[in-house]
Length: 275
Image (cartoon, rainbow, N blue to C red; front, side, top):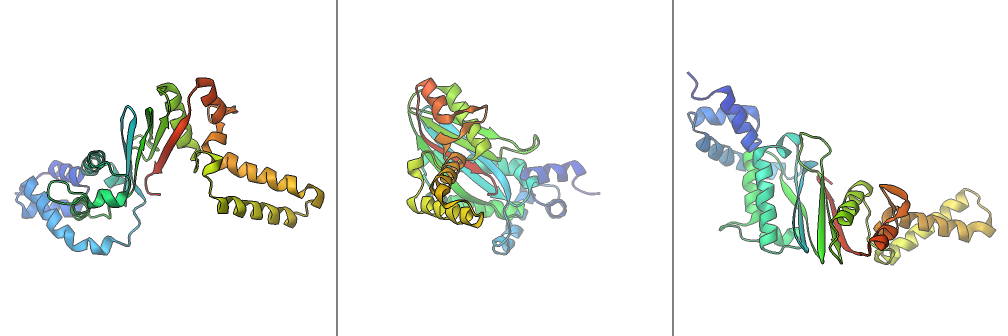
């Protein structure tokens, strides 16, 4: 008689994110001992860690922490949505986020190298990689500060964890506006906060493309400067947060929304899991 049930296999799979056959075999070898089965999955999984390095980790989740004027966000990637929603992966994400807050990490490199109970965060990920049988990585970390920081997490499916996360720092406390701007940022994915933040070489590249495109379209030379300027301004409108039309009211820009509330956005961050 088997030392485990179908429910045991299901529970182990949900807890670790490992494949069903791997869970069955681990439970057989562990004679039904769940903790021993988890250990076996880790041991056997370590052999495949290097082989998984070239796999595409295009799923995962985003986790955030806010506390008044502090916001921290981490992105944790994995290969499949099954693992992304597993108990083990969600718990791992919380551990990584808590560590990012504790060590004041501002980038993935410093977070991965930080000590977490006698091992680095990278070693923790390697262990999870072995247990779950998937490539798991932390590609990005954000830490922003302001008088007030708002956050927003967006789920693309109800049965999956949040895959888009946003932090927005304001120079004054206004949770309603902060949340509105965060939700807008999640939807419209701006790249820069202000026009001045766009690198000069990027602006010149857009200007050159706009001019070459206009000439290919045989636009009149007399109108060329105006056409190019209009297209460069369209680029700013698409990519600069402060110049974007507010998602809830396209007749109002984010700049006008903030001015009406008497606040300014001082920083923002947007992550999308798998990207």
